[in-house]
Length: 67
Image 1 (cartoon, rainbow, N blue to C red):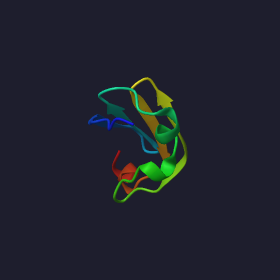
Image 2 (image 1 turned 180 degrees about the vertical axis):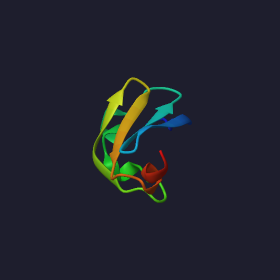
Image 3 (image 1 turned 120 degrees about the horizontal axis):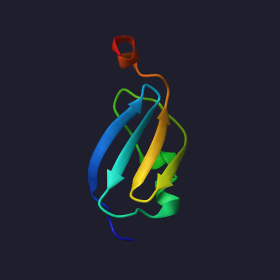
């Protein structure tokens, strides 16, 4: 399995963000929540793969108070 490089990450809302890789990641690895971590966020659910992008749900972030 080839390692993919992360090329970007974007908050989609206070409960969801996306990460984009340089090429489509392995579908099984991409959909495994344990393969991701973000300091200060609780990740939830099953990541969704769409091409080179993975969408991940989170518990509401503390930053939501300021948005």
